[in-house]
Length: 303
Image 1 (cartoon, rainbow, N blue to C red):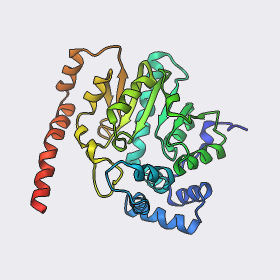
Image 2: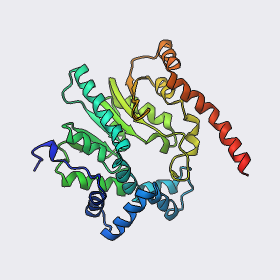
Image 3: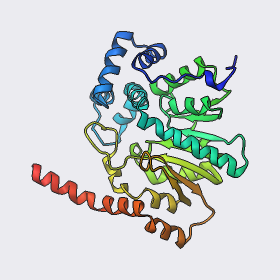
Image 4: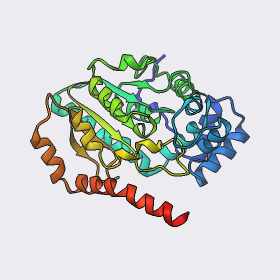
């Protein structure tokens, strides 16, 4: 059975809709879901912070305990569904859809191959499916978040229709995708340049990556953002360019989310010059360079 129309696809944004969604596709009782959803709404990140305590994770440090949190924790289900319900967060995927439509028109590609890399509970995949696009979905296979997303897709009769599951990360490689969407993933991984290089290998020549990152947001309410990745704050366009992906666009509203990178055959000095001539890019680069000093002063004055 398949849906008669993409418009039939529903995505929860109201409190009761989110509670119903989590209750239906998790093993949690409704009363617990209501309480945890409300707590997430008034205290962002509270569910993931609870997972940090449950799995004895050292905040901002990637190790086996952090991997176990990603595998067995359910905090990201609450965090991603509640945050996606905010208009600001939804703008990321709305802007991405606009860029995908422009890519379709420019390349005369009516059915682009799209990879959703790290889509968690799956709302962005559902959004694109709702707008008539077909996507491949990849997240941490076997995790509670992954299983939750799969149940949602299956209930909406989207599996192997508008949404195809990718079970093995290596299957994402091979230069087969026209577009890869990767929102708020890079700050969680121990080697962002390696993943950025993989993004290049996922794209066909001329393909685009639509990316958001929060390298500089290493805070108490975001304990899974890695401290070691602070060094990449403000450098994202340069790290991508080093991997043959040129900054081709970025969103002004909301600011810098997402950024679009286009895979190019080779990197030229002119491409680096264009980055340095972009006031926003240069401002972020300088800010990222001085932030370690500012953080050091703050620690010194509070000790």
